[in-house]
Amino acid sequence: MDENIANDEDGKSNNYVLDEVMKLPEKYRVVIYLFYFEGYKISELSKILETNESTIKSQLVRAREILKENLKEEF
Image 1 (cartoon, rainbow, N blue to C red):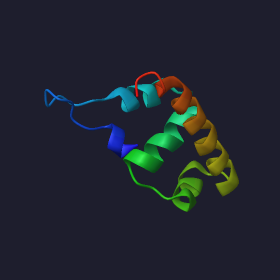
Image 2 (cartoon, helix red, strand yellow; image 1 turned 135 degrees about the horizontal axis):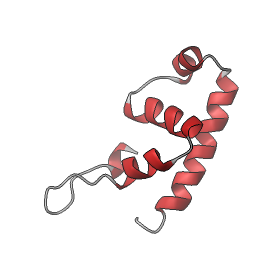
Image 3 (cartoon, rainbow, N blue to C red; image 1 turned 120 degrees about the vertical axis):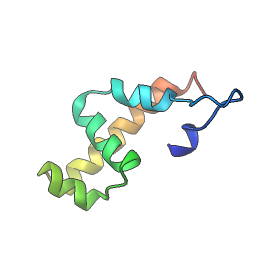
């Protein structure tokens, strides 16, 4: 995801992905943000969010699917 948050031709920050992440339902937004933008591992997220690792993995998969659908027109 970090590859998609780059500078555009004018040198302005290209925040399409971050904007779409912030539009996600909270349970997906939190895991995506902490995993990709803050660099937490799944095991760390499990402890922070007090949930099973399998739940975190499922939420990441679902959030990626939603983002892929929402961003396919942008990229």
